[in-house]
Image (tube, rainbow, N blue to C red; front, side):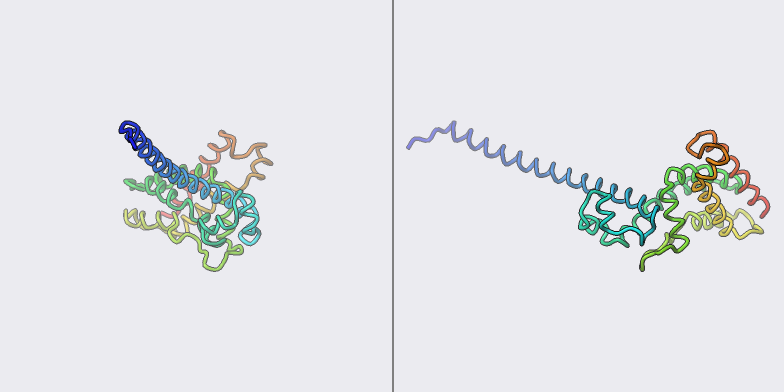
Length: 231
């Protein structure tokens, strides 16, 4: 039997190319799967944040969460282990970003008034953008139906600023700085969640740029007055 050497070579090249293409496709599929998994995880966090904010931890079942997210209950378990695990992930999902924003403000500043003004400016806009998350954290802070093993963030921005200011030796204050910062957080949260009040008073809410800036300037003045009263 005569073997066509050219045909054999072409066949070998064809097989090698097919195998290489199959391997490349597998790698590409793996990359797509990883990206898809991350998108799914983000979608679960986004929709769980809204549901937990509206109805609380005990008011939402895993089945409802899975339907809202367009996934099977197993997918939630795969990404977060359990419903408490998902709730904890939602509750703490913006911690690092908040600390980074506050850290950037505090770094290199020695004037307390400037720090307060910039922190209010930075966090007000961020909290407004994350209104559902603010609602959720307020409910959690009130102890609303938390699951066993779920805790509020241990390293909050309040504790972070308290320590940073102490490190910078900004001087003694009449006020307890930690309590003052919790007051600041409470004031910001209250205004972020007071949509009905704003609409009743102004006919608009904080989505209006002029109302938002007016409110921010007001809060900076009020909070700064509290700070100055305690120096």
